Length: 373
Ligand code: SIN
Ligand code: CO
Image 1 (cartoon, rainbow, N blue to C red):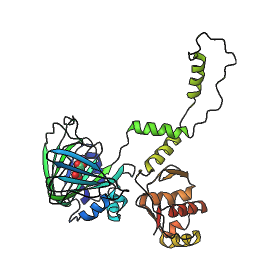
Image 2 (cartoon, rainbow, N blue to C red):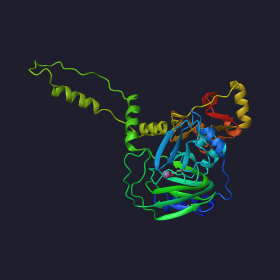
Image 3 (cartoon, protein in one colour):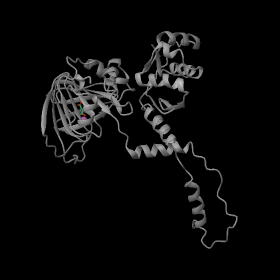
Image 4 (tube, helix red, strand yellow):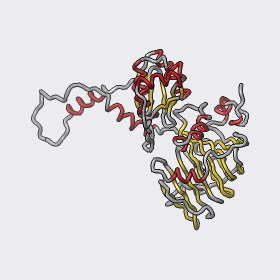
């Protein structure tokens, strides 16, 4: 089996079996000769945009402060101990997107985003733990990571940041550009910049069941069908007009117990929910869209690709794109699954889709969900 430099010589299967969700892995030169994909200045510009999620974290005079973006101005580069965090850089930069896609041996439903941090000397976000797995790729300069398992997860009270009160590091590494540290969820860590540095976090998502449950009930609200209405033809006079009658409760209870959901409902909910773009995501339509007939000719030549911001998933006969679901016939499904998995479809495959799918592709193109070529 092909070995992955990215995983320090381990195959994805070995990595997932032995480390994923289990224990940390330090990979020296995961990406040999790695150079930052964007300059500090480009990152500062990105943090000033209102369609980009960013935070400025300062630790001046022993006090943690957090400012949520957009961050119009950053402290002086010569000032120590501050960090700028920019989420979702992959949504705005092709190379950042390509870096994230190197981790596509893990399903898209788990992959979250590429966060880029810039820190001046001694900068960091303090000892903490995250609820998700993360790969921390050193992009520029050096960072010292201290990590520890089985920690007391008590947090410092009243701090603007989630800081561990009693962090006892067990291991320490200095990461150079191209080195990468994998940490499982809940694993305590503290990264400190040695001089100016940039670190890329390849982050994952694992939705909480409570969050899913609440969203599922909302989803089901649109599809339940409970005919009939409460009736009491045999109503008797009451001495307690404020009391809710037993008969009323049992009739309502019987009706509510008829609410059912199938595996298909769950699949459609999960696909729509997990492909739904985050609130900060805005799609850009092409400035001068082609007509449908020109579009049809163009995709037959050049194929189509998903926009960096598009999430496309599938399960069984269901396909999902950016929070919408639809069912496709067998032939179309094969092409659309290729588009979802590879994030592109060549001209040959794009030219044989049905009229319905062609129209859907055209709408997605007009909405900026897919691009030509
Ligand atoms: C950072 O890059 O400064 C923080 C990343 C992390 O600790 O999760
Ligand atoms: Co962290």
